[in-house]
Length: 174
Image 1 (cartoon, helix red, strand yellow):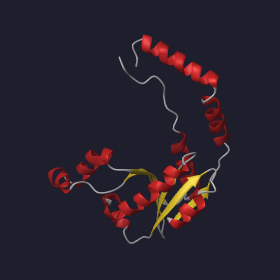
Image 2 (image 1 turned 30 degrees about the vertical axis):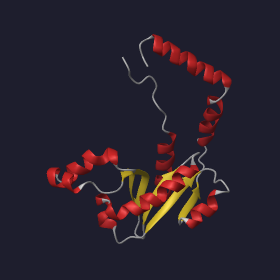
Image 3 (image 1 turned 45 degrees about the vertical axis):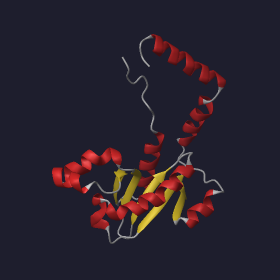
């Protein structure tokens, strides 16, 4: 009987939403925004609204989009994997013109922002070359996250995970 055995803590969702709400409290914001178009045949068959909902799993998602009076700001938050965020943002920016959910904002300039608590030195040149703004955001609660990550890879924790996995397997969960 397969199933979920542990709830996943989603630290980056919290990280991005707090940053957006603190930084852009009065702006319109959207989280986990699907980007790109949907096949025309889907739109013809189902209508735009249903096609957007049905095709959503096939569309990439940016962490957040903020609509200000001056710009459409695409935000990707990365606590550790800065390279992932830097590589995604140019693609996301290129998908905005064909994204139905953002057609009403097509006159606004598109800004790309990577939010991270620690900027690796190597990332500055890449961000600059890609026209990506890097913002350092390090709320106090991140210390707990770092502490959990440090413990996760210790020998003791690896052994605990293996034991837990074995118990679950013997109980019929895989």
